[in-house]
Structure formats: structure tokens, C-alpha cells
Length: 380
Image (cartoon, rainbow, N blue to C red; front, side):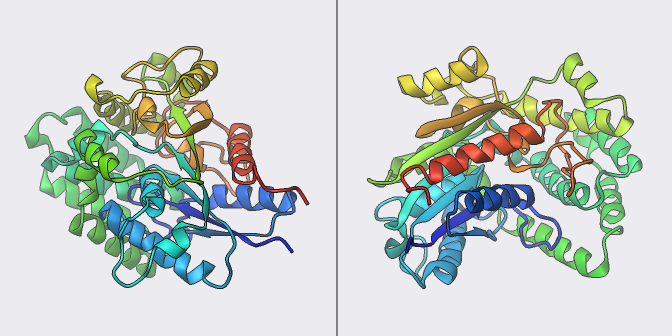
């Protein structure tokens, strides 16, 4: 009898799998679970609950705790699929000699890992983290966290919130434009639409985001340089990456976003974070192998330039191991957060980039991940 496979979906920056119906990996879990069942693979797929903005070491300890609770009963193979920062958590988990928890031993589980898949992960860091280190960036981060949860719950932000935030973004370089009273009004209005129980959970989540932001400096290009110096590939583990590149904000992407005021103003948020992510120092861009370069050229028609990104992470920062697929998508598209409300359950987009990424590309992407996970496994 074939051993059970244990597949872990590791969320990225401010992952919120612990907020009830607000599912970070909801669509990805569904598609991957069905794909593995179609292959006849006995697999358990688990979504990880991580401290949202804690250090990579703490988040990896969260991953270890979940693996210990769900994979201790057998010796089946383990597969790690991490989105964004979750890809870094997965790399640290399997790094030989890593120490992430005093309470649990990592090595017995790390040596069972067969594959590590990273999706839109900042293997060379992202300049957006540098921006979030500032006072304005920290306040913006909390708002974006709340925006994400609100949109996934209700479908879109109230127009009054969007217009106020649009005004705020238009004055982003003017410190007087970031008023504490306006922040309070935005938070109160958004939180007021949740149930009492959900409001308490969201408030706790946002408190966690503000209490421990040690992850942010680790995601700067300089911080990741240190991470890479101490994190090593494990022999026998297959590493693969999914790479995303979104269109630069332009008249074309504004038209693609639609004429709805909500879409246009939320596209402004995308344009702002994209402009921060573009600022990757040339000296921090990693060198790629010929095979990696060929995969990027084949996917995009040319090597992505130094400013190419998915709105959150530079495209060339995302390459690690074998390039499984490279797609035209923004940072959240690859995990199912794109605009396709007619699908059941609906796909809801809050980072409106005009990428054009939809369900067929999403299913193809996750089938490619399934192919890689089971590559060396016999078909039943």
C-alpha cells in the first residue's frame, strides 16, 4: 500500500487562514485536493496557520507544529507549497541543521520532505518591505491587511472608504495627509460591518500584525541576503518555483480594470505598491541558471527587466530551483484571489491590477504544481 502524502500550504505575509470564512488558500486547496484525488494519490492537504508578520524562524516553528500534529502517525512523504513569504518558511524548514523550536525536533520531519514549491516568493527580497519599515508604510500595512479581509468577506470596500483612501494615497508623500482621525474612521467603518465574533478575531489579527513585525526587515533585499547566507538546500529535495509578473500600471491596465469607481480607485492602490516594488537595486538581482533564464524567456517572450514585478515582489526575485511555470499575474492571482465572481465559490479580487488572470490559468498553474509534487510517484 502506497504511503500517504502530506501536503502543506504555507501562507505568506499576513496570512489569515485562522479567520473562519476568510480563506487564504480556499480555491487553491480545492483545486489541488481534486487534482491529487484524480491521480489516485492518498494525500492529506493541510493549510498552515502562521503568525502574520512574525520572523521567518517563528513562522517556520508554526509550520513545524502543524506538521508534528498531522504527520507524526506515519512516515509518508511531505511536500511544502509556500506562497510569498511562505516559500521562505519552507526553505528554512528543510535547511540542514536549522533550529526553529526548542520544544519540537525538526530533523525527523525535514528529512521526509520530497518537494518544496515556492509561489511568488521573495528569494532575493522585495523593496516593498523597505517601504513598510517607515511610519507611513506601517500604517498602510495595517490598512491593507484589513482591506484584504474585508474584500474577501464582503466582495468590495464601501465606496466612501475607497474615496477616502484614494485621497490619502494621492497625498502619500505629504505627511500631513495621514491623519490619525482619518485612520480611526476607516478602521471603525470597516470593522463595524463584521459580526461581533468576527470583529474580535479581526481585531486580534491586526493587533498581532502591529505587535510583531520582525518579518518586515527580513524581507528587504539586505535582510534576505543574510537569510540566504544561512539557509541551504537539502540534498534529495526537489525545489520548484512559480513566477508571476504583472503589467505595469498604465492606461491599458486602468481600462482593463473597468470603469467602475471602486475598480479604478483600488487600482490606484496597486499602482502605488507597484511603484515601491520597482525599486529593486540592480546589485541585489540574483543570477539565474541557463535553464531558469530559458524558462522565463519562453514564458514572457524576453527576460523580465529589473523593474518587472507582480506588484509585491520583483519577478526575478521569485526564481528558485526549477521554474515550474511563469505567468502573467499579480501577487495574489496565483492563489485564487482574482476577479471572477460568477464562479462558485466566487473568486474575489482586491489587488485590481488588470492582469487578466482567470480560472483556466489558475487551474493549469495548480495542475503544474501537482505534476511536480507527484513527478517521481507511480500512477495508480
